[in-house]
Image 1 (tube, rainbow, N blue to C red):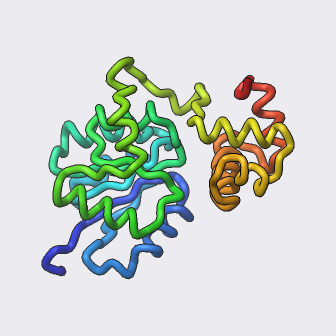
Image 2 (image 1 turned 180 degrees about the vertical axis):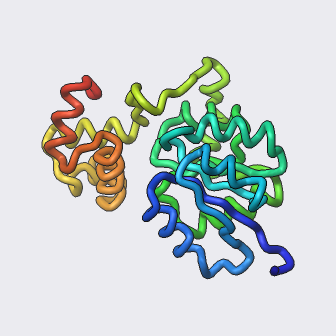
Length: 218
């Protein structure tokens, strides 16, 4: 074992995503993935055997989701740092998870170099604050009103996701949306892909119908 090797676990119900994260970080020799789990219950059962230092945990998983899992880990295994790795880009989720004891909050579009930095930081300082999380903490929205998020029923959109969805419904292309929002077309496509995965649709038409049916845009 390397001198400063950090043992990491990843919990996500998509095997391809788990393998992709592990593969993308194989060049970081001081980080060793010691276990995988397909849901929170699976993760909690394996922790005593593999004793990870850090857990990369998805939010929406079957059997036991990332919210309940984070609460249990921080209570029963206080030395383990939990970093949320999710597609949910919403400030209220960030605040709630930090209240539950999460040490960091990353989106699934995060570059492997930032995942590495987050792992190193939570081991060194106990937490990782990126600009997204800093924004939440500075605004202190989550401390003004309690938010108990649902991962099964309520559809929660960030301001940027809602703006992209609105412009998609207005029939703007990704390039046009990028110009209006002053972001890259690649970012627009990533947001659209994330929304399609969450809504269970396959294309922009599906996004429009879902948004209209569920009154997600004004």
